[in-house]
Image (cartoon, rainbow, N blue to C red; front, side, top):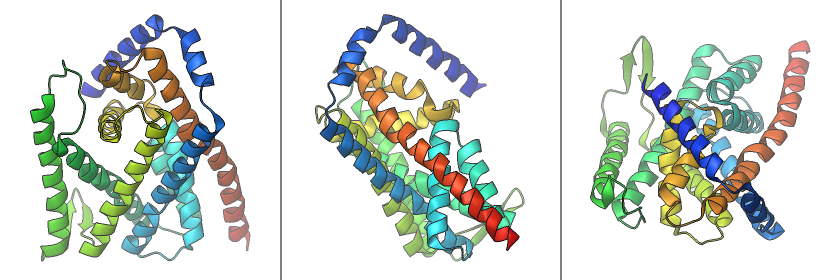
Length: 299
């Protein structure tokens, strides 16, 4: 019930915020973006998508399949774009199942690819969020109940989980575990390190997109911290694209520093650059992948 209750809370909060917004001011704030700023944000977004697409290249090594790297990158890009906009069941799971199965991978291999990629994504989150929270450099609202000390303890906990995973991969003699009938195999420690590095760089790239769209008016560490909180909130609510959740978190944590129209304008620009523009490319690429897969099957 918790996700549903949280969703109701978020929807109520967003509705209240929307009624109080001066949408004319939001439009004016959006128009103030120049082409260079938007192009810079789009370029960094492209780097982020490229980094994320490499997750499945690591998964290819882990799962042991031999699909060409170009097709793996294309499938991951399409899955990520649809995942962000329509939710993980459609993008992260559905598109991978369809496209990989049409290229000859069985369900066990696809499950290993999917599980390893999801784990890679959140390992980088643990490392980056933990480091930022522990650093004590994050600017917080004065009335935020968790406080700087609580945030540091949360960061320590996140880093401890990340260290435990890396320790298992490096030193555990037992290399596989069974959970609910599924075998979970530990990767080698170099592969685990690659997971951390690749994912952390991707999360930093996402934060850079927001940092550019905020026109460097906000400390980069604060941008990272707020992004980390919004990512978890989006997962908890299961709202496709985190619609409303992202906005609620940013308004709640940064409303003391920026006007609401400025915040909403920034987030609208972010969604256009990081969500909608890549989705149009992914839709076209998906059509090409479907055509190629059908052509290969005919042959």
